[in-house]
Length: 112
Length: 112
Image 1: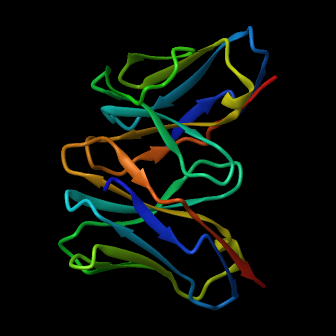
Image 2 (image 1 turned 135 degrees about the vertical axis):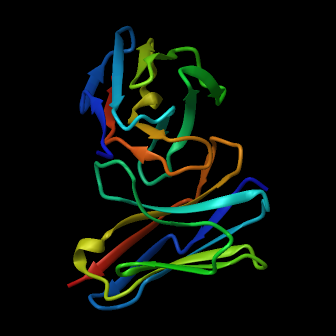
Image 3 (image 1 turned 90 degrees about the vertical axis):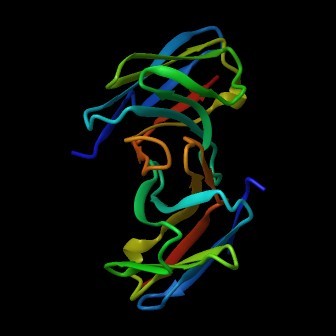
């Protein structure tokens, strides 16, 4: 119940394409859902985050869609660029807790 | 300033050595974290300090010993490590519970 399931494991898209990464959770106590981007040899960096009171959040080319009833959320990257090639982790945490549960990660490669 | 710094960037140690990893943040965050990350895997939580007190220990072997000297600093003391402890060690901080965690660049540790 503490898991966050992320798919796909890897993704290859052409430049300008719209990669979509999906995550699902079981624990209804989760109330904060961040996405992290990680480049090789670097620490994860927060990309965008959402709380369950909204269904969509957009920041630049990155959009989170959130479906509370289905317990699913996804990341869309508009007009993807080769510089977006990285590993993306979805995550979830619950109110009153320090523990963040990470998905397994998606390795994205954007072809020029 | 949303920076978490970690030293050293790289560390090679033998199984009988004693070494320490250091982490620093000046964002006024009251929670600090140690994570371990193996290649192609998500970060795994090791320890959480809240208000300079150990809040979470994820059953980490005693050869890893955390220390929080003050609200800005976090250390991880290493002793008698095993080759399987080789990984990227990440420090993170957050304002509080269920809040964005800001990660440092990590220390790449190799145990010979």
